[in-house]
Length: 104
Image (tube, rainbow, N blue to C red; front, side, top):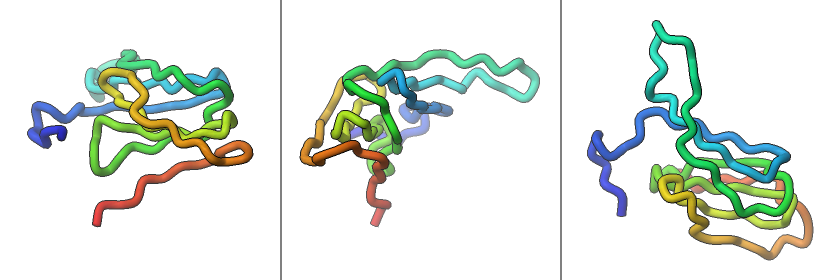
């Protein structure tokens, strides 16, 4: 289980998805008001076989993200390693959105 100590929590990560079947995680921690914004690649998540339609950060584990895709799956990813954690199949068609349940 991830530690919640400040040194272990990534400061500013941005996730994006696209028609290229990839999820890009960018590190924004070096951006300050006095610098020109430059995105630093943190991780590229590969595994979907069609357009990715949505992503959502896991509110219970900051190192995980879930994605949905036209390939009919929802996949959970480890943002640090880039590895797929779980793949949920069962939809007969495209999956358009995903959401984690909020913290109790």
